[in-house]
Image (cartoon, rainbow, N blue to C red; front, side):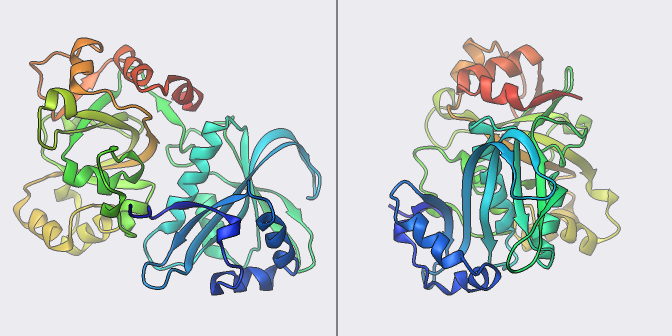
Length: 359
């Protein structure tokens, strides 16, 4: 079996001699001792990403559940159930791997029903500070240490800022603004890596921007997509890949619309490519062709908020959710009741309910 790009590894299987850890050893004089302490206990795991060419680490994320007051920072943080991002490092190489790891931290936070996430980071790591800030982490304290003071950044999950990105992965619930969007299998799984079917090999996933990013762009010509607005919820429907769509076409994910643009809104081809390239599954050659032919005039940019635990198929959508068979299944609107029914069938209704807020 091919190891997935994002693995969950025991500290015991990770070498402290990996060059990846050199900067952490430099920043934190006690890092070696801390790491060896984690390594001595079998229950300690971290999320990792390894370079395919040499097996060395290119990404590392350690998460820790905490309750109570955080009293080693100034000022102390009040009592709460938090997920601490204890160690988070990426070797940047232009593939938005940091977003992939941050999404995993959010996934764990939602699953464990914490009130907040927090992280300590030196201000010199500007790219990392900017990444956290983009997703609603705010400076709340400082942490003194042997190598100087660190910033303490916290993201509350029990507060709403009223913004699709700052509130990610929370879902703004607009009355009557829920839609199902169909994606072909060839695009679906590369765009939404946590929504692979059990029959799919993780070897199809690559360390590339559109796979790793929290943000996605999909080009479409489907009837009705012109009505999408920022904050609309999207249920992603993976169409059949051989066999009967009645059983194999499934809803896999919940996403939120960030922006809808028409292809004619771009000043030129270069402007169009700059917008699409980091988040689209299409190759540069395909994008250039789409721009010239205007074959797919609508660009839907959305956030990838939740991969469903169980995937309701077309049969369930027809018979239980009561979606009419006669509609156009490429893109269509559903009611709030139907949206909730899909979440109940997926087993994620309680989890999703904790993410939803009125917009």
